[in-house]
Image (tube, rainbow, N blue to C red):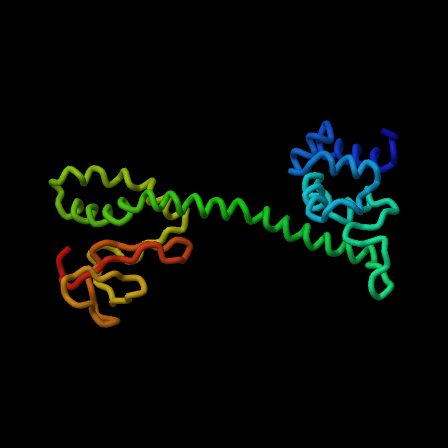
Length: 227
């Protein structure tokens, strides 16, 4: 292949970004090497916008910077060589601005992805922990009230889990044995009697939880003064 200016510029960008070959760059960007071969020939106008965005991200460049290196005199992506209906073609800077907006959107999407994955993983873990989350606080209160119960010795072992829940922003709704005003939004009534009126004092038997301020489990409440 002729060593065109486009090819030289692309290879320079590839090496500056730490890639030893175009196939490695294509693999990192998640695109076909076919597009890179087109760029080597100066055919940037024939490359889809999405491909250009991925390539810019892989090279650590803005779309404007990438266009400046590889654009040459070709018509920018998204334009056409044929006159439009009104006889005018889109201006290159308009296309670059559109590309930059798409680039910024994908950059933000990539930045948000780790937190989204973390939230998803936390949600799955919390589903596995659900029996413990709902049953343990009640068992812990019973153990604290009976010093002879061997389970009391297990209470310190729960501190790491409590620290993990705090790190995950899992917040308990009330505490076991606490009298609180009834709120069906965050309480589940489990007594045999009809549900109480809003604001009626009820006893928390099993605590509930919020995760990132969203309701995870309602606290289970009933009438009475004994757990």
